[in-house]
Length: 160
Image 1 (tube, rainbow, N blue to C red):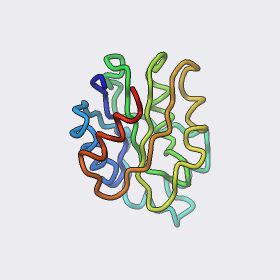
Image 2: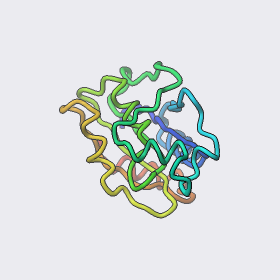
Image 3: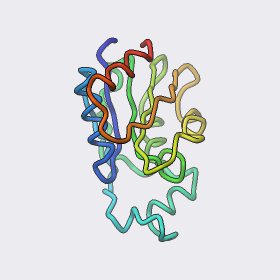
């Protein structure tokens, strides 16, 4: 496998830990997707229909702003993209990220963390945010404590 970029958005630290473990296991570089306005615990209260995350997820056109625009995606052919599953799909900031950069001709491998859901319609919802010739691969949910060997084996099994 060529050197890959592991990008991730993490609101609570869970996805950050998975991304760090994956980057270390595959020898990839790491990039954090940060919102311009960080999420507070009140923003993430899914029980509150007026919380920021609830409002964003209720509006598929929502595109939370990014803190910066310097992700080095142009330097890589393979980009792993991690995020928590919110309401059975990726948070809309992932669409913001995909629409901000040029992924033409690249392979984007999705991975997620979740309290109980799987990918659902995540890949289908993200596909319109990338160019038609971007290979978008539904990876896997990386919950729990996966060993470096398990992560490496999974990544190598993708055949990239």
